[in-house]
Image (cartoon, rainbow over all chains, first blue to last red; front, side):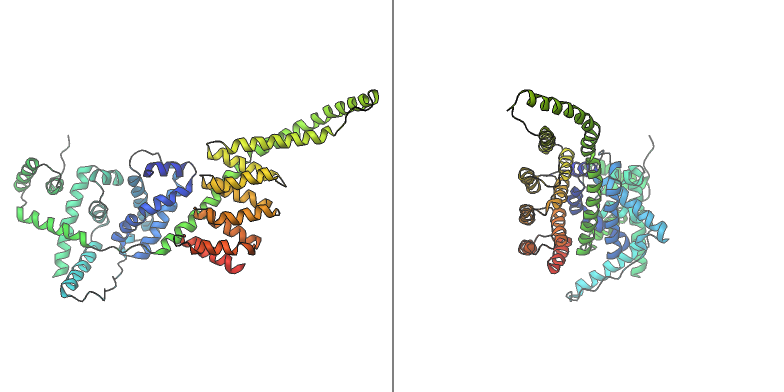
Length: 178
Length: 267
């Protein structure tokens, strides 16, 4: 199996159909990345589609140094910022209500659903910067070093931001919980 | 060295990979900075609870949109490469333009010599040297093309396929080679260019048949799409069984399925 870097180098060299393999590898994590921010399936799908279009557009700029995922997340981050400049709001400023799961009858699950709903609301109230580091570290499984490379800041700063984001989130959640 | 903010130490303290001894040190530092153990544990539990937040799967529309975009971009890139790939064709054209007049003069002289020679030597075997020369040039081009198709570099093979576009009527050997390229070249751009080249020879029933038979030998959605589109353009009704067989493939890409279904309905 080809590594991400090998595939992206092939895409850069003109074998652009190889992008399909990278798309299959990354569509779910990238969708999850945008979804954690936006809470909107439609916005997230549009952003993933645009992300891979940009990968194709900027393929000649791919150097092959470092992890492919770090490069991809950098583009994803810029995409979100562009989206913000265009629409005057960050993609994660539109919270979509989750459809209730009718099969979940048990009280325990209903309580859990309520907790999750509150957590989603709390996430929306974090600052974009807080949300970004929290999503990248906790949900996308990136290392602090990788996040530092994506956000152009030292590893220690990332760790501090993640901790502050957790503190803020917990504070907001407690208020929402009443 | 600049020291990390105190909050950064919490992340190391929570990290399972941090050695126990270092954890003890970090704990002391954090307690000294005013954090309590209960507070830190509470936050860690809260952090872990975030893992349960559900994320839906992306929908099929994302796949469709992506593969549509990829097919369009590949076609665009193919056209661009083919334009660059026309360089050998331009080279031959230039050779023909610059060399042919000179060859013409040379041939005229040779022809004159031959005419004089036949007068002087009655019964000598004649023949059209012009025809032979044209045949030799054509043969030479064919050789270049066949040699280029053997190259490891996909761009060389792409050039070879593009070179074949020059023939108005490809002979059986060229057709066989192009068919083999379409079915077995590892590079999808080369296969796409081959479809394009072969589409120029569709007056030849062998080519039409070969293109139809190739539909189900293709794994790349882009080539499947190109062949289906070509069958639609040619209104090739006899391609219907192969296209229907392609639709039976459960793994068929959504975008290809949409397009093939449309083509079948048009035939």
